[in-house]
Image (cartoon, rainbow, N blue to C red; front, side):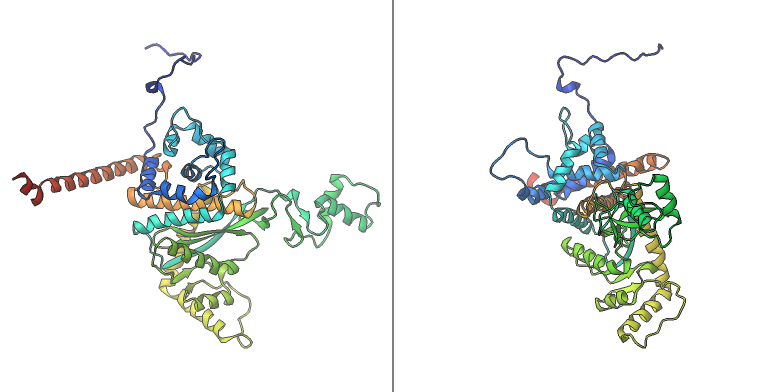
Amino acid sequence: MGMGKRKPVQEPLFVTHDNLPRSAGHPFYVKLNELLEEAGFDRWLEKRCARYYAQEEKRGQPSIPPGVYFRMLLVGYFEGIDSQRGIAWRCGDSLSLREFLGIAVGFKSPDHSTLTNTRKRLPEEVFDEVFQFVLKMAVAKKLISGKTVGVDSTLLEANAAMKTIVRRDTLEDWKEYVTRLMREEGVIEAHDEPSDEEVRRYDKTRKNKKVSNEEWVSPTDSDSRIAQMKDGRTHLAYKAEHVVDLKSDLVLAAEVLPADHGDTQTMVDSVIQAQVNLAEAGSEKQIEEAAADKGYHAADTLELCEALDLRTYIPEPQRKYRGRWTDKPAQLQRAVYGNRRRVRRSKGKQLQRRRSELCERTFAHICDSGGMRRTWLRELINVSKRYLIAAAAHNLGRMLRRLFGIGKPRALQGEGGFAALVQLILTELKMSFWQFGAISSAMVSPAALTAAA
Protein backbone atom coordinates (compact mmCIF):
# COMPACT_ATOMS: atom_id res chain seq x y z
CA MET A 1 0.00 0.00 0.00
CA GLY A 2 1.39 3.35 -0.99
CA MET A 3 1.77 6.18 1.47
CA GLY A 4 -0.79 8.95 1.27
CA LYS A 5 0.45 12.49 1.03
CA ARG A 6 -1.18 15.61 2.43
CA LYS A 7 -2.35 17.87 -0.36
CA PRO A 8 -3.82 21.38 -0.39
CA VAL A 9 -7.58 21.25 0.13
CA GLN A 10 -9.78 22.93 -2.44
CA GLU A 11 -13.26 23.69 -1.18
CA PRO A 12 -16.08 22.45 -3.44
CA LEU A 13 -18.07 25.04 -5.32
CA PHE A 14 -21.43 23.50 -4.40
CA VAL A 15 -22.06 21.83 -1.04
CA THR A 16 -25.03 19.51 -0.65
CA HIS A 17 -26.65 18.47 2.60
CA ASP A 18 -25.26 14.94 2.33
CA ASN A 19 -21.69 16.23 2.10
CA LEU A 20 -21.81 18.21 5.35
CA PRO A 21 -19.81 16.71 8.25
CA ARG A 22 -21.86 14.99 10.91
CA SER A 23 -21.23 13.68 14.37
CA ALA A 24 -22.59 10.54 15.94
CA GLY A 25 -22.72 12.46 19.22
CA HIS A 26 -20.88 11.86 22.48
CA PRO A 27 -22.67 9.17 24.56
CA PHE A 28 -22.39 11.27 27.72
CA TYR A 29 -23.84 14.44 26.19
CA VAL A 30 -26.56 12.43 24.48
CA LYS A 31 -27.66 11.10 27.86
CA LEU A 32 -27.41 14.55 29.41
CA ASN A 33 -29.64 15.99 26.70
CA GLU A 34 -32.16 13.21 27.25
CA LEU A 35 -32.20 13.94 30.97
CA LEU A 36 -32.74 17.68 30.39
CA GLU A 37 -35.40 17.05 27.75
CA GLU A 38 -37.26 14.68 30.06
CA ALA A 39 -37.46 17.41 32.71
CA GLY A 40 -38.58 20.08 30.20
CA PHE A 41 -35.53 22.22 30.84
CA ASP A 42 -35.63 24.31 27.65
CA ARG A 43 -39.36 25.03 27.75
CA TRP A 44 -39.20 26.10 31.38
CA LEU A 45 -36.09 28.22 30.86
CA GLU A 46 -37.39 30.05 27.78
CA LYS A 47 -40.61 30.87 29.60
CA ARG A 48 -38.67 32.09 32.65
CA CYS A 49 -36.25 34.29 30.66
CA ALA A 50 -38.80 35.75 28.22
CA ARG A 51 -39.36 38.85 30.38
CA TYR A 52 -35.72 39.93 29.98
CA TYR A 53 -35.93 40.19 26.18
CA ALA A 54 -37.89 42.45 23.84
CA GLN A 55 -41.56 41.52 23.58
CA GLU A 56 -42.97 43.88 20.93
CA GLU A 57 -40.22 45.70 19.06
CA LYS A 58 -37.81 43.26 17.44
CA ARG A 59 -34.62 44.70 16.04
CA GLY A 60 -31.61 42.82 14.79
CA GLN A 61 -30.99 39.12 15.12
CA PRO A 62 -32.64 37.16 17.94
CA SER A 63 -30.41 36.16 20.83
CA ILE A 64 -29.17 32.64 21.41
CA PRO A 65 -31.71 30.48 23.28
CA PRO A 66 -31.17 30.49 27.05
CA GLY A 67 -30.84 26.72 26.95
CA VAL A 68 -27.83 27.03 24.64
CA TYR A 69 -26.17 29.56 26.96
CA PHE A 70 -26.54 27.41 30.07
CA ARG A 71 -25.46 24.30 28.16
CA MET A 72 -22.25 26.09 27.20
CA LEU A 73 -21.61 26.79 30.88
CA LEU A 74 -22.19 23.10 31.58
CA VAL A 75 -19.59 22.30 28.92
CA GLY A 76 -17.13 24.52 30.77
CA TYR A 77 -17.47 22.31 33.85
CA PHE A 78 -17.46 18.94 32.11
CA GLU A 79 -14.51 19.84 29.86
CA GLY A 80 -12.56 21.63 32.61
CA ILE A 81 -12.47 25.01 30.81
CA ASP A 82 -12.20 28.06 33.04
CA SER A 83 -12.63 30.96 30.58
CA GLN A 84 -15.51 31.97 28.33
CA ARG A 85 -13.17 32.27 25.36
CA GLY A 86 -12.10 28.67 25.86
CA ILE A 87 -15.71 27.52 26.12
CA ALA A 88 -16.68 29.33 22.90
CA TRP A 89 -13.70 27.91 21.02
CA ARG A 90 -14.34 24.35 22.26
CA CYS A 91 -18.02 24.45 21.32
CA GLY A 92 -17.20 25.78 17.87
CA ASP A 93 -14.49 23.19 17.30
CA SER A 94 -16.31 20.01 18.37
CA LEU A 95 -19.09 18.49 16.26
CA SER A 96 -20.36 16.43 19.21
CA LEU A 97 -20.68 19.57 21.37
CA ARG A 98 -22.47 21.37 18.54
CA GLU A 99 -24.86 18.42 18.50
CA PHE A 100 -25.30 18.79 22.27
CA LEU A 101 -26.03 22.51 21.93
CA GLY A 102 -28.44 21.96 19.05
CA ILE A 103 -26.46 24.06 16.54
CA ALA A 104 -26.87 22.80 13.00
CA VAL A 105 -23.89 22.35 10.71
CA GLY A 106 -23.34 25.50 8.69
CA PHE A 107 -24.33 27.82 11.53
CA LYS A 108 -21.86 29.66 13.71
CA SER A 109 -21.55 28.82 17.39
CA PRO A 110 -21.99 31.66 19.92
CA ASP A 111 -19.01 33.93 20.52
CA HIS A 112 -17.52 34.62 23.96
CA SER A 113 -18.91 38.18 23.84
CA THR A 114 -22.39 36.69 23.45
CA LEU A 115 -21.85 34.75 26.67
CA THR A 116 -20.87 37.96 28.45
CA ASN A 117 -23.91 39.88 27.18
CA THR A 118 -26.27 37.07 28.14
CA ARG A 119 -24.77 36.85 31.64
CA LYS A 120 -25.25 40.59 32.11
CA ARG A 121 -28.82 40.46 30.80
CA LEU A 122 -30.02 37.68 33.08
CA PRO A 123 -30.25 38.53 36.81
CA GLU A 124 -28.84 36.40 39.59
CA GLU A 125 -32.30 35.03 40.43
CA VAL A 126 -32.37 33.11 37.13
CA PHE A 127 -29.11 31.34 37.97
CA ASP A 128 -30.46 30.47 41.42
CA GLU A 129 -33.59 29.00 39.87
CA VAL A 130 -31.57 26.96 37.36
CA PHE A 131 -29.64 25.47 40.27
CA GLN A 132 -32.91 24.73 42.06
CA PHE A 133 -34.34 23.22 38.86
CA VAL A 134 -31.49 20.70 38.79
CA LEU A 135 -32.20 19.86 42.43
CA LYS A 136 -35.84 19.40 41.45
CA MET A 137 -34.75 16.85 38.87
CA ALA A 138 -32.84 14.99 41.60
CA VAL A 139 -35.88 15.10 43.89
CA ALA A 140 -38.03 13.62 41.10
CA LYS A 141 -35.49 10.79 40.74
CA LYS A 142 -35.51 10.30 44.55
CA LEU A 143 -31.77 10.90 44.81
CA ILE A 144 -31.76 13.44 47.68
CA SER A 145 -31.87 12.57 51.35
CA GLY A 146 -31.45 16.07 52.80
CA LYS A 147 -31.32 15.04 56.46
CA THR A 148 -27.58 15.24 57.14
CA VAL A 149 -25.29 17.75 55.41
CA GLY A 150 -21.62 18.58 55.44
CA VAL A 151 -20.29 22.14 55.27
CA ASP A 152 -16.86 23.18 54.05
CA SER A 153 -15.21 26.08 52.22
CA THR A 154 -12.27 26.83 49.95
CA LEU A 155 -10.65 29.83 48.28
CA LEU A 156 -10.91 30.86 44.62
CA GLU A 157 -8.28 33.01 42.95
CA ALA A 158 -9.74 36.32 41.80
CA ASN A 159 -9.05 37.97 38.46
CA ALA A 160 -6.88 40.66 40.05
CA ALA A 161 -3.19 40.98 40.91
CA MET A 162 -1.66 41.93 44.23
CA LYS A 163 0.64 44.45 42.53
CA THR A 164 -2.36 46.59 41.58
CA ILE A 165 -3.78 47.11 45.08
CA VAL A 166 -4.11 50.66 46.42
CA ARG A 167 -4.72 52.15 49.85
CA ARG A 168 -8.33 52.89 50.70
CA ASP A 169 -7.57 56.28 52.28
CA THR A 170 -5.04 57.85 49.89
CA LEU A 171 -5.42 55.64 46.76
CA GLU A 172 -1.63 55.21 46.67
CA ASP A 173 -0.20 52.11 45.10
CA TRP A 174 2.49 50.07 46.85
CA LYS A 175 5.47 51.96 45.42
CA GLU A 176 3.98 55.39 46.16
CA TYR A 177 3.16 54.30 49.71
CA VAL A 178 6.68 52.98 50.42
CA THR A 179 8.23 56.08 48.83
CA ARG A 180 6.22 58.29 51.17
CA LEU A 181 7.43 56.27 54.16
CA MET A 182 11.02 56.68 53.00
CA ARG A 183 10.59 60.46 52.80
CA GLU A 184 8.96 60.63 56.23
CA GLU A 185 11.85 58.73 57.82
CA GLY A 186 14.44 60.84 56.03
CA VAL A 187 15.91 58.00 53.97
CA ILE A 188 15.64 60.12 50.82
CA GLU A 189 15.10 63.81 50.18
CA ALA A 190 11.67 65.28 49.58
CA HIS A 191 12.15 65.67 45.84
CA ASP A 192 14.17 62.50 45.19
CA GLU A 193 12.65 59.56 43.34
CA PRO A 194 14.01 56.19 44.51
CA SER A 195 14.69 53.36 42.11
CA ASP A 196 12.75 50.10 42.21
CA GLU A 197 15.71 48.35 43.83
CA GLU A 198 15.90 50.95 46.61
CA VAL A 199 12.17 50.66 47.26
CA ARG A 200 12.39 46.85 47.51
CA ARG A 201 15.45 47.01 49.80
CA TYR A 202 13.72 49.44 52.16
CA ASP A 203 10.50 47.47 52.13
CA LYS A 204 12.28 44.28 53.20
CA THR A 205 13.92 45.92 56.24
CA ARG A 206 11.03 48.00 57.63
CA LYS A 207 9.12 46.70 60.68
CA ASN A 208 5.41 46.22 61.36
CA LYS A 209 4.77 45.46 57.73
CA LYS A 210 1.34 44.03 56.95
CA VAL A 211 -1.27 44.09 54.23
CA SER A 212 -4.84 44.15 55.56
CA ASN A 213 -8.19 44.32 53.82
CA GLU A 214 -9.12 47.31 56.00
CA GLU A 215 -6.35 49.40 54.43
CA TRP A 216 -5.89 47.97 50.92
CA VAL A 217 -8.28 47.25 48.05
CA SER A 218 -8.04 46.18 44.43
CA PRO A 219 -9.12 48.91 41.97
CA THR A 220 -10.01 46.34 39.31
CA ASP A 221 -12.09 44.03 41.54
CA SER A 222 -13.19 45.70 44.73
CA ASP A 223 -15.16 42.63 45.90
CA SER A 224 -12.05 40.44 46.10
CA ARG A 225 -10.11 40.21 49.34
CA ILE A 226 -6.48 39.57 50.29
CA ALA A 227 -6.10 36.00 51.55
CA GLN A 228 -3.49 33.30 51.96
CA MET A 229 -4.08 30.36 49.64
CA LYS A 230 -3.58 26.74 50.65
CA ASP A 231 -0.20 26.62 48.95
CA GLY A 232 1.04 29.57 51.04
CA ARG A 233 0.74 32.30 48.39
CA THR A 234 -0.94 35.59 49.22
CA HIS A 235 -3.52 36.41 46.57
CA LEU A 236 -6.75 38.29 45.99
CA ALA A 237 -9.46 35.70 46.38
CA TYR A 238 -13.08 34.77 46.98
CA LYS A 239 -14.50 32.19 49.35
CA ALA A 240 -16.69 29.33 48.08
CA GLU A 241 -18.76 27.41 50.62
CA HIS A 242 -20.57 24.13 49.92
CA VAL A 243 -23.43 22.45 51.73
CA VAL A 244 -23.34 18.80 50.62
CA ASP A 245 -25.87 16.05 51.19
CA LEU A 246 -23.82 13.36 52.92
CA LYS A 247 -25.93 10.54 51.49
CA SER A 248 -26.32 11.48 47.82
CA ASP A 249 -23.12 13.56 47.30
CA LEU A 250 -25.18 16.41 45.81
CA VAL A 251 -24.41 20.06 46.48
CA LEU A 252 -27.48 21.65 48.10
CA ALA A 253 -26.01 25.17 48.25
CA ALA A 254 -22.93 26.80 46.73
CA GLU A 255 -22.28 30.28 48.11
CA VAL A 256 -19.52 32.62 46.90
CA LEU A 257 -18.50 35.22 49.48
CA PRO A 258 -15.64 37.67 50.08
CA ALA A 259 -12.55 35.83 51.30
CA ASP A 260 -12.40 37.70 54.62
CA HIS A 261 -15.74 36.30 55.83
CA GLY A 262 -15.05 33.77 58.58
CA ASP A 263 -16.45 30.25 58.50
CA THR A 264 -18.26 30.76 61.80
CA GLN A 265 -20.08 33.77 60.31
CA THR A 266 -21.36 32.08 57.15
CA MET A 267 -22.19 28.50 58.15
CA VAL A 268 -25.75 29.07 59.37
CA ASP A 269 -26.64 31.25 56.38
CA SER A 270 -25.38 28.59 53.96
CA VAL A 271 -27.39 25.84 55.67
CA ILE A 272 -30.51 28.04 55.59
CA GLN A 273 -29.94 28.65 51.86
CA ALA A 274 -29.65 24.89 51.34
CA GLN A 275 -33.01 24.42 53.10
CA VAL A 276 -34.55 27.11 50.88
CA ASN A 277 -33.20 25.36 47.78
CA LEU A 278 -34.70 22.06 48.92
CA ALA A 279 -38.07 23.69 49.50
CA GLU A 280 -38.00 25.38 46.07
CA ALA A 281 -37.10 22.04 44.52
CA GLY A 282 -40.26 20.50 45.92
CA SER A 283 -38.64 18.42 48.66
CA GLU A 284 -40.27 18.04 52.05
CA LYS A 285 -37.01 16.99 53.69
CA GLN A 286 -35.70 19.04 56.61
CA ILE A 287 -32.01 19.43 57.37
CA GLU A 288 -31.54 18.08 60.87
CA GLU A 289 -27.77 17.48 61.19
CA ALA A 290 -24.71 19.40 60.02
CA ALA A 291 -21.08 18.29 60.16
CA ALA A 292 -18.14 20.66 59.67
CA ASP A 293 -14.45 20.93 60.53
CA LYS A 294 -12.98 22.67 63.57
CA GLY A 295 -12.73 26.00 61.73
CA TYR A 296 -16.51 26.34 62.13
CA HIS A 297 -16.46 25.85 65.92
CA ALA A 298 -17.72 28.87 67.87
CA ALA A 299 -20.06 29.06 70.84
CA ASP A 300 -22.34 31.61 69.18
CA THR A 301 -22.63 29.49 66.03
CA LEU A 302 -23.44 26.34 68.00
CA GLU A 303 -26.05 28.18 70.06
CA LEU A 304 -27.70 29.56 66.91
CA CYS A 305 -27.80 26.08 65.35
CA GLU A 306 -29.39 24.68 68.49
CA ALA A 307 -32.03 27.43 68.38
CA LEU A 308 -32.80 26.37 64.78
CA ASP A 309 -33.14 22.67 65.83
CA LEU A 310 -29.96 21.80 63.93
CA ARG A 311 -27.70 19.21 65.53
CA THR A 312 -24.05 19.99 64.93
CA TYR A 313 -21.03 17.69 64.71
CA ILE A 314 -18.10 20.12 64.82
CA PRO A 315 -14.83 19.10 66.55
CA GLU A 316 -13.26 21.61 68.92
CA PRO A 317 -9.88 23.12 68.07
CA GLN A 318 -7.09 22.63 70.58
CA ARG A 319 -6.97 25.63 72.89
CA LYS A 320 -4.23 26.61 75.31
CA TYR A 321 -6.57 27.34 78.21
CA ARG A 322 -9.81 25.77 79.35
CA GLY A 323 -12.93 27.82 78.69
CA ARG A 324 -14.79 29.54 81.54
CA TRP A 325 -18.55 29.95 81.59
CA THR A 326 -19.07 32.11 84.67
CA ASP A 327 -19.67 35.30 82.67
CA LYS A 328 -21.47 33.73 79.70
CA PRO A 329 -25.11 32.71 79.14
CA ALA A 330 -26.09 29.18 80.08
CA GLN A 331 -27.39 28.37 76.58
CA LEU A 332 -23.90 28.84 75.14
CA GLN A 333 -22.44 26.29 77.55
CA ARG A 334 -25.29 23.87 76.86
CA ALA A 335 -24.76 24.14 73.09
CA VAL A 336 -20.98 23.61 73.33
CA TYR A 337 -21.24 20.63 75.68
CA GLY A 338 -23.98 19.02 73.58
CA ASN A 339 -21.87 19.35 70.44
CA ARG A 340 -18.87 17.90 72.31
CA ARG A 341 -20.83 14.81 73.36
CA ARG A 342 -22.10 14.21 69.82
CA VAL A 343 -18.65 14.53 68.26
CA ARG A 344 -17.16 11.94 70.65
CA ARG A 345 -19.73 9.30 69.69
CA SER A 346 -19.14 6.77 66.94
CA LYS A 347 -21.74 8.47 64.77
CA GLY A 348 -19.93 11.78 65.05
CA LYS A 349 -16.65 10.21 63.97
CA GLN A 350 -18.38 8.49 61.07
CA LEU A 351 -19.97 11.74 59.92
CA GLN A 352 -16.60 13.50 60.08
CA ARG A 353 -15.05 10.86 57.83
CA ARG A 354 -17.99 11.11 55.45
CA ARG A 355 -17.83 14.90 55.42
CA SER A 356 -14.12 15.07 54.71
CA GLU A 357 -14.55 12.62 51.82
CA LEU A 358 -17.60 14.09 50.10
CA CYS A 359 -17.03 17.81 50.68
CA GLU A 360 -13.43 17.65 49.48
CA ARG A 361 -14.61 15.62 46.49
CA THR A 362 -17.01 18.35 45.43
CA PHE A 363 -14.20 20.91 45.56
CA ALA A 364 -11.97 18.58 43.54
CA HIS A 365 -14.65 18.19 40.87
CA ILE A 366 -15.84 21.79 40.66
CA CYS A 367 -12.65 23.75 41.39
CA ASP A 368 -9.79 21.55 40.21
CA SER A 369 -11.09 19.41 37.34
CA GLY A 370 -14.08 21.69 36.68
CA GLY A 371 -12.02 24.81 36.01
CA MET A 372 -13.34 27.03 38.83
CA ARG A 373 -10.26 27.29 41.04
CA ARG A 374 -9.22 30.47 39.18
CA THR A 375 -11.97 32.79 37.98
CA TRP A 376 -11.61 35.07 34.97
CA LEU A 377 -14.62 37.19 35.90
CA ARG A 378 -14.72 40.21 38.17
CA GLU A 379 -17.21 41.33 40.82
CA LEU A 380 -18.93 39.01 43.26
CA ILE A 381 -22.20 38.71 41.36
CA ASN A 382 -20.51 37.53 38.15
CA VAL A 383 -18.34 35.00 39.96
CA SER A 384 -21.41 33.71 41.82
CA LYS A 385 -23.38 33.23 38.60
CA ARG A 386 -20.68 31.14 36.96
CA TYR A 387 -19.89 29.13 40.09
CA LEU A 388 -23.53 28.29 40.76
CA ILE A 389 -23.97 26.76 37.30
CA ALA A 390 -20.75 24.78 37.82
CA ALA A 391 -22.28 23.37 41.02
CA ALA A 392 -25.46 22.55 39.09
CA ALA A 393 -23.33 20.76 36.47
CA HIS A 394 -21.71 18.76 39.27
CA ASN A 395 -25.15 17.67 40.47
CA LEU A 396 -26.11 16.65 36.92
CA GLY A 397 -22.94 14.58 36.73
CA ARG A 398 -23.74 12.85 40.03
CA MET A 399 -27.26 12.10 38.76
CA LEU A 400 -25.97 10.65 35.49
CA ARG A 401 -23.52 8.50 37.42
CA ARG A 402 -26.31 7.12 39.57
CA LEU A 403 -28.60 6.50 36.59
CA PHE A 404 -26.19 5.40 33.86
CA GLY A 405 -22.83 4.81 35.55
CA ILE A 406 -21.03 7.74 33.84
CA GLY A 407 -20.58 11.06 35.63
CA LYS A 408 -18.27 12.90 33.22
CA PRO A 409 -17.46 12.62 29.52
CA ARG A 410 -13.85 11.77 30.31
CA ALA A 411 -15.04 8.67 32.19
CA LEU A 412 -15.19 6.92 28.80
CA GLN A 413 -11.41 7.35 28.46
CA GLY A 414 -8.69 5.30 30.09
CA GLU A 415 -8.96 1.87 31.68
CA GLY A 416 -12.48 2.29 33.03
CA GLY A 417 -13.88 3.73 29.82
CA PHE A 418 -14.73 0.40 28.23
CA ALA A 419 -16.49 -0.85 31.37
CA ALA A 420 -18.48 2.37 31.61
CA LEU A 421 -19.47 2.12 27.95
CA VAL A 422 -20.59 -1.51 28.41
CA GLN A 423 -22.67 -0.47 31.43
CA LEU A 424 -24.25 2.32 29.39
CA ILE A 425 -25.12 -0.12 26.58
CA LEU A 426 -26.61 -2.61 29.06
CA THR A 427 -28.72 0.15 30.56
CA GLU A 428 -30.00 1.06 27.10
CA LEU A 429 -30.83 -2.60 26.35
CA LYS A 430 -32.62 -2.97 29.67
CA MET A 431 -34.77 0.10 28.96
CA SER A 432 -35.47 -1.15 25.42
CA PHE A 433 -36.52 -4.61 26.66
CA TRP A 434 -38.69 -3.00 29.33
CA GLN A 435 -40.46 -0.86 26.72
CA PHE A 436 -40.83 -3.86 24.42
CA GLY A 437 -42.26 -5.90 27.28
CA ALA A 438 -44.75 -3.14 28.10
CA ILE A 439 -45.88 -3.01 24.44
CA SER A 440 -46.12 -6.80 24.23
CA SER A 441 -48.18 -7.03 27.41
CA ALA A 442 -50.49 -4.33 26.09
CA MET A 443 -50.91 -6.25 22.83
CA VAL A 444 -51.92 -9.48 24.62
CA SER A 445 -54.02 -7.82 27.31
CA PRO A 446 -57.58 -9.13 27.90
CA ALA A 447 -59.01 -6.00 26.30
CA ALA A 448 -56.94 -6.62 23.17
CA LEU A 449 -58.00 -10.29 23.03
CA THR A 450 -61.66 -9.35 23.42
CA ALA A 451 -61.36 -6.81 20.64
CA ALA A 452 -59.69 -9.40 18.41
CA ALA A 453 -62.45 -11.93 19.11
